[in-house]
Amino acid sequence: MAYPNPLIESLFNEFQPIMGADYHRYKNHVYRVFLNCLLLDSSDLNADKYAIAAVFHDIGIWTNDTIDYLDPSIAQAKLYLLVNGREALSGEITQMIYWHHKTGAYKGKYEQTVETFRRADWIDVTFGLLSFGVERKALAANRKLLPNLGFHAFLAKAVFKNLLKHPLNPLPMFKR
Image (spheres, one colour):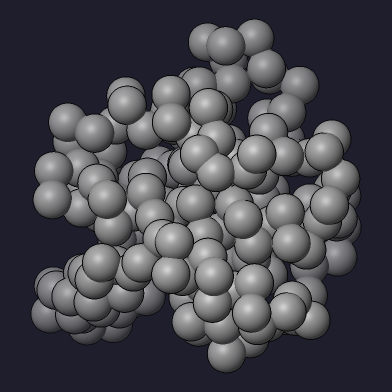
């Protein structure tokens, strides 16, 4: 069963104290991205990779209190992988996180998982407007199971605050 996922649950327990009111918003986003990955790639071999990348892909927003969160998110993922003896996944998870905002198709090392993760996040961020061939009924079912809870509004507010502080660099996570 993909939901709930024991790996995602154990990782989230660690971050709950720093997330406060955003805990359930982000957790639902993580699960929607994870489930989108499984809809795009049915291989059981990649499920743990998608779970890890999903948890960590935006976590720097909270761990480092920043909208420029890609590097801090990667650092948190690498630390988790090191501490848990999963360093062999570090390169792949890093690429999945680093490229998840890329607007065009990813080509390169770990192409299948990186591209799947990128598409899965875009599916969620666009509320399924971009579906990459995933059945819309499945996306709607995941949204019903895991509602948005204001996650996109939270992101918009964070981006607006960053725009006021850094008008020349409003979306630092996209300048990669």
